[in-house]
Image 1 (tube, rainbow, N blue to C red):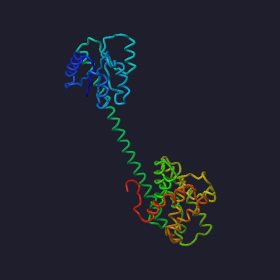
Image 2 (cartoon, helix red, strand yellow):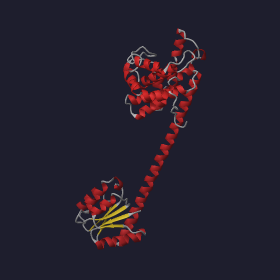
Image 3 (cartoon, rainbow, N blue to C red):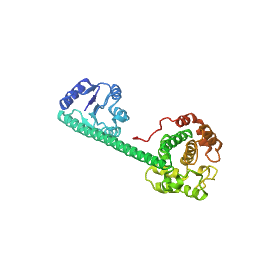
Image 4 (spheres, rainbow, N blue to C red):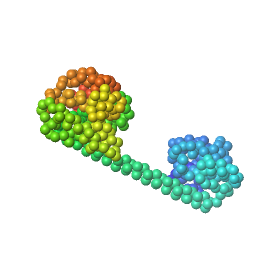
Length: 349
């Protein structure tokens, strides 16, 4: 606990300083000038301030008001020493932020008692603030841990689904990365870009409900089989519906609408334009592009340049033109991902 005494009288300053030193066991900081004291408070933290009322540069009320304007001193106890018993003065001092008063000539025992009591109050304030900060850090740490575990579970679940679809699981990593790049390219805020990155791997979670005979068929699907295959979007949405977290709610939007098309010819709801959630518009482009570049049981992988041209050509029909523009603008980053750079992983992997 550090204490500052401000008084323009050397004798009063020395007297108060000696009494306070007896109380604390440590020498307080003494200052003859209120302006110099304010400057000192700008670089040092004191736990109790004793200030005289009448001083030539600045009176105690003005000093207290100036001190209280600083965030670090909003709760620090302030004792004003005064010989004036005027009620208006005391009210003004209290409004300025004075905690207590000491009337001149003061009693040594009274001063020691007031200093001890207010320092005990200050100690309790500091301990409470430290405890609150510790609790805040612990809550943040626990929340971060839970989020990391949620992200890891989602990522591993998505990879499991990809294995069923005949892929190694890296498709979901690439779709997540490309989706984040496009989201950044169209100007979405960082936290939303991050959410899309985390939710994108679950875009095809509904395939868990599709029979292997259809999911892994080496040839073209019949119209009946295609109808069944398209049910994966609704299955995915039902799996994810009514989620409590922003991540799961974002994943539901993507699972439900990532096969909608900008011109309204997609499925399952034939949404068009901005009626399609922006998260789904972004993932739709990333998913189709990576699927074109990937070998599947029913097709060979396209050359990356051909897939790029297809995406650009479909801007305004299949894909949101803004997303296509971002895809073109960020092509260097996307091309790097497609060349096999180590994929980004969910937290904890």
